[in-house]
Length: 274
Image (tube, rainbow, N blue to C red):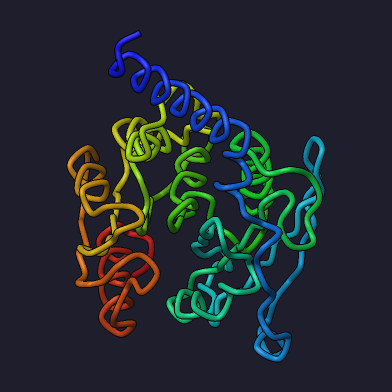
């Protein structure tokens, strides 16, 4: 047997074993829920958090609602649903979202099944079910205007809110440091797209979405490359804006003051706030 045939066969076998391992372990890599620490309780003590438990098929999911600091005269104001990254939990993200409440927007943080205190197992199907239940609960609140509910997702959370947008109506989408799809990300690691069990096809959702879209991405992001953000921005149909910052994945945005000015401008332009 020629040497090149022997080595080609060995390379093929190695690749098959590699792909098999990725297929078997992919949900542990995408949802590393058992390796995430909690935020110090003291950071949460003074926050006006309303804890709400949601029951979905196979899971009981924790969600936290933070009321806006001021309410409109008719009592029904805008709200936002937030989906965090794959290596985060809602208790780690609460403080950074408080500026939304100062803009008059209620904030709902929804945990993923299997994360934190929530039961169940994370997958695109189970997470989408949890967020759909969360949306229905939020839209039914007497203090929320269902026509002004914004979906905001960061990293993996961008896939979560896009999956939600395929099932429920959003007034606007904010996608921070997220991907066009998990299948597109898999190609970076030489894994065939058909092996991805949770595709989170953001690009298709953004193409079909008729409302305003804000894409936030770091130019030097080495985890989810910048071209994912520009592709999403170009695919959106209406009132699309790209906020490109000089940062990577985990340090984006680099300037909080500028970021919140940009966010407020987008929300005013979208008609979410006055």
